Each structure stands twice: as structure tokens, then as C-alpha cells.
Length: 493
Image (cartoon, rainbow, N blue to C red; front, side, top):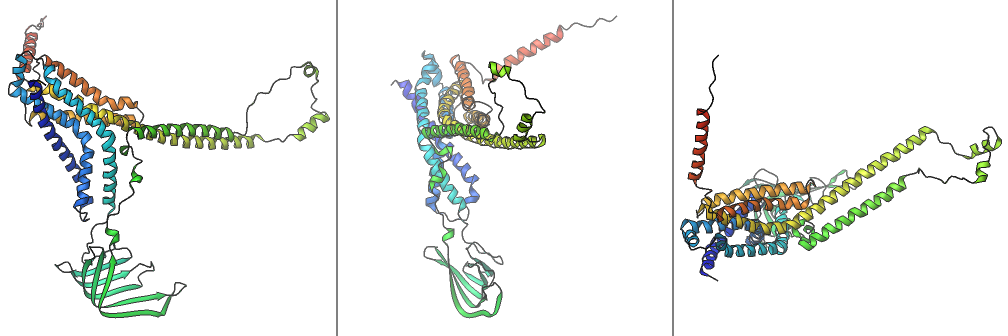
């Protein structure tokens, strides 16, 4: 490896690692802001938060790699141009394509890594991350009993306290309704004061009550009140223990989330698309068979008897006894009944067709989603190489390093890629565009930008220097002034 290759690689790897970490951190902060309300007050523990951060950091890597590649290439070649190193290399007769070559090989390696990551690690991280997030979102908020409000989060009980002291344990005026038997407010406990605390690693809640009574009003079998079945128990001290099992986070079976396209690799997505297409063909065949069975009347062509005996046979007269006998043997249906039967059959067949069409459309959308997700594993990898072309070319043109101009240009092209990707996915999933056109359109458009900027960088174009545009503006201004000077004057008559 030549010294020029070592120089370029060293200049590229540092900003690439730094920008990748920064971009992943920014996307992770976006995730925290999006689901912040689902994390508050649930006492999840550091291990749960650690797993969530790891899983969603891995999930953000595929979308972060194109942006970090663009930003790193802009900073790398912008710094080389700003410190005149790129000018010195060009003056030695080395073309810009040769300067870009080592970093281009590295960008191709990033694209290959991105494809492997999208196909292997990302489905696993999506499955682990979103299943854990679902369990976090469905976990109850930590026990928090407030003054003067009935607390009903403990299954089977309603609890109210008049006053809760600053230590969080001492209570005044405690009322507890027992609804565990689902038979109304017939079991109530009143206490003048009490204490509240947990035990056995927060798995049980204990109410230690003082100076109170427990009232139970029993019912007879016919659900009517029996005045002789009223029980009152007074106490000076009483303990009531409640299980807090419902407050703990319960893990859901991860197999319930494997149906989504984000949780599958390319082979699984191909199997899903093929199975859906087979289901569509099977549905069409069954619908055809069902429609044929729904017909009661068939228009069939019978062969005409052209034999000599048939031609010589005399027609039966309408008034003869043979015609009367044939008329009695045939069941005659009125025109109204036949029309009503045919109309009902047509309506039933139409409803059946509409239902089948809706089912087929739904299955086709699922197949398209699988195809879109499959091709995204390729497009996101190729986007890394496209972003490198744009970043390296622009960096050698603008000759500005640091986080100023590179960050601005990176955000601009990243937003363009994101908007085009959302637009292409929308039209592809709605079956307006072919899937290949929808998923590859952003990369194709950005590739045109990259080739154009590379052409300008090869020819040492000055796209971002203000004096060039000032010269063009002066030329346009002079042409406008000449046009006004040579404008023919009106002749007075």
C-alpha cells in the first residue's frame, strides 16, 4: 500500500467511526424521546434499559451507516482540500480518481457489511427490541397511592387514604373495599391509621392497620340480603397483605412477533412472498369452483338432429292429446319467480366476489411488503456507496472540513434520501409503482448526483465559489443592459 493510500484511509476511518457513533446516539435519543412516557414510573431496572439501548442501537445502524459514510467522506476530503494536501497530490500528477480509490474500497466494504448486518443482525435486534418494548409498554406503573383518590390497580381491591404523610409509609383514614369475589361492596375495612410498606423484594404490599373495623354483609343464594348475616369485626391492629405480581414485567413469547417483515431475513421473506402467491392462486381456484356451483341455470348447446327421419317427422299440433300430455309433464315457472331467483343468485355471487377481491388485495399487500423489505436490505447497503460518491466528490470541491458545511450538506442529502424512500415505499405498497421502481428510485437519483459531482471534481469545477456565480451574474446584467440600450424607439406620427 502506498503512502497516499495510507493517508486517505487514516483520514477517512477516524471521521467515519466518530460520525457513526454520533449518528447512532442521535437516533437513540430520538427513540428515548418517542417512548419516554412508557418508561416513567415503572421501576424497570438498569438491565432492562441496558437491553433496550443495545437492541435499538443495533436497529439504528442500517439507517446510520449511509449518513455516517456521507459525513465522513465530506470531512475527509474537505480536510485534505482545506490544508492543500489534495492540491499537492494533484500537482504531482495523481488524478482525483486515484485519490478516491482507497476510500472507495473501504466504502464498498461498508456496503457489504451493511448488507450482512441488515440480513442477519437487524432481524434479530428488531425481534428482541420490539418484543421487549411491548412488554415495557404493557407493564403497570409502580404503586402510587394518592390522598383522597381510590386506587384500583391492585386486582380485586379499591383503596383510599385520607392523608399520606411525608415519609410515604404512615397513613391516616384508610378505606379498603374487597372486590375479589365480584359481589359488590359487601366487604369493607375502615381504619383510623396505618402503615404501608413492601416485603420480599417488593413482591408483596403490607397494610398494617390500627383501630378499625371490618364489615361483611353476606347474601343468600337467591342474591337477596339476609339481615341476620351481617358480621362486624373490630381490631386494634390488623395486617392485610396484597400480591404485587401484576406490577412486574412479564415477558411475552417472541414467536408472536415473528410474523412481521422486519423480523425476517431474505430467505424467510422469499418464503413468505411465495406462500402468499400460492394462497392467492388457491383462493382464485376455489372462487371459480364456488361460482360455478352457484349457477342453477346453464346455457348449453344441444346437437341438432339432422337425420332424414327427423326431417320427415311431422310437427305436433297444438290441440292434439300428445301436446296436452307434454304440457302437463313440464313444470312451468312464472317469469317473476325466475327473475327473482336469478337476481338473488347474482347478488350472492357479487358479494362473494367482492369478499374474495378484498381478501386477495390484503394478501397482495402483504406480499408487496415482504418484497419491499427484502429489497431494502440491498438498497440500504448500496446507499452507503452512493453516499460515499456524493460526499467524496463534494468534499474535494468545497475544500471545507470540520462539522460546518459537511453537516449541512449531509443533512440535506439524507433528508432527500429519506423523503424519496418514503415516497417510493408508499407507491410500491399501494401497488401504484412496481416494487423495484419504488425501492431503487432513491438510490438511482442519488447516484446521478454522485456521478455528476464526481465529474465536476475530476475537472476541478468551482461549484461552491461565489466569484464564479458573480461572473455569471455580471454577464447576465450586461446582456440585459445591452438589450435595453438597443431597444428600438417608437416613432411619433
